Image 1 (cartoon, chains in turn purple, red):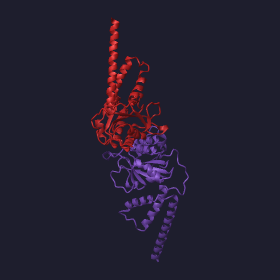
Image 2: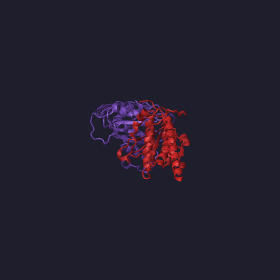
Image 3: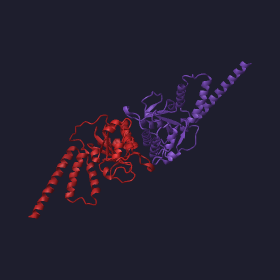
Image 4: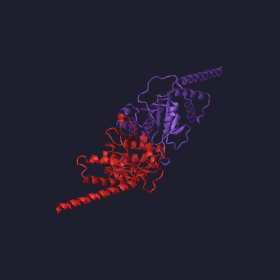
Length: 256
Length: 256
């Protein structure tokens, strides 16, 4: 298997129990992870988060942000975790132990990657999952599939460390045109596309949300590089411009 | 690798935090483990142990016992866990991920095995470790090697489940002469041997404890079957008898 050494960010989405944030940080420290982001924790949860043994630096540098995209940041590969027991998902879903080989086949060495964990009660929503390139399921038994959040983070960190899929040092800051585009850049492209789809009347109010989730997945699966994203963004900008021009022409003809 | 399906017992030695007992039970339930024993928990710790989600049956059938040997019960293979950072150990010490292959090479399918976890503060003592056939270390990073107990149990259970080293059903109750002797039978042999070593003056008061730890390890490493243990027990009984006869003869000669 190709040697991997990814720069991981662990993202906890709406955790409800401050003990679990500390527990997640400690497991990260145990296995050489450094980068923790928390999305929309209830305020008291975030205030009450105490530094866990050995994880002081992780908790100190962890950030709480409002939305998932900010938490994902400049990661170019996003993996969601799910117990996989409730929903039918249209993403690739693999057992955790197959993730290292999957990553080795698809990512470049030292890429930035994010691993998402949903809240203790509800897991990741379909909207959250639409930002993921793939989903992993910890291979728990069917009649007791839901894991404690801190333990789930520990098991995932162990598996990635075991497979040497964790970088020992922080990532270089260079970004190359041939690198995979990060989720932020892709979201800019996506927003442009949504704007156009609205303008041409493709999105119907009733199915809008579900359609956007599907389309975001299609975009992610293209595996665009930064160069691709730049070109596609340019194409979409041109279409947007043309639509706008045509509309204003049509309007001025009407008013004549 | 040979298919394994061992009957595991998880043994927590002197846990200090009742939450950790519940967390261990939940992780066990997640990965199909059923059998939990707790050695000498502080009384309030055991009283306060609450059933964890999905682990009600495990907690209900778990037992608290006074000493490690009773907790190990009829297991024929005993594995200790250690952070491995403080002591020099004379047992084979391997990273957790190598345990399944080690077991496959040494145990029979559906053997009974025990996995020991020490207390949160001190881990397993040298005396506890002397009951172990091998030790595993979860491959944590050097500068943060000590794991939370519940998370350590989760990671170990995951690794064993991943490698299909966990039996789906409880063990058969047949015991064959050609089976590996369980720790209880070996301890009977060992006690006989200690009796003889005391009688012949081999054990010196100062080094007694350390010597016994070493000798127990030697005995374990022999990998005796039930038949072997029976024969060896017979040999030792005969030596004990002869020593006793000679001593009483000597005594009666003196008094003549």
